[in-house]
Amino acid sequence: RLYKATFTRLDPAGAGEYARNLEAFEKRLDEARARWAPLLAQIRGKPVVAWHTSWRYFANYTGMNIVGFMEPKPGVPPSAQHLAGLVQTMKRTGATVIIMEPFYDRKTADRIAGFAKAKVLVLPPSVGGIKGLNDYIALLDHDIKQLANALK
Image: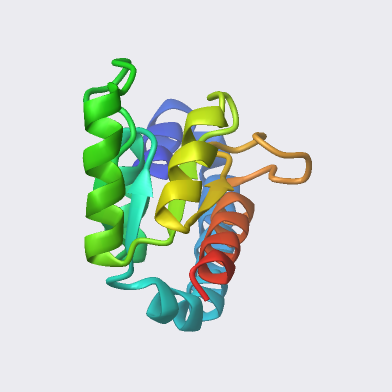
């Protein structure tokens, strides 16, 4: 809505097109939310570990419960002590999935997943991260479905 208002102010002649585009996007988003509702119900409250704190935004939307991060602080590689504590946290909370971005080396995540009897789920964090994920709705469609399947 903010974009529509801004573009309309900058280009009043295009106001009709901006309004139609917003209406079409909101319709697609409402349809997607209806598709996601049963999947989000499966995800809500489930404990997971994430590689990076950037997954907090996705957690806020999906309701997944991030019980720990592979990186103790963004950009800081995990120490052996941190990872050992993370394995214990995963076992204590029942976390069975480690979520990470495709641009990180998954060797450490695979090792921790092995100790915790969990699996690593590599998800694209942004549009274009995988072929065919050309917009926000397609990205969330993919990531929500993948997470729900991993948590079954």
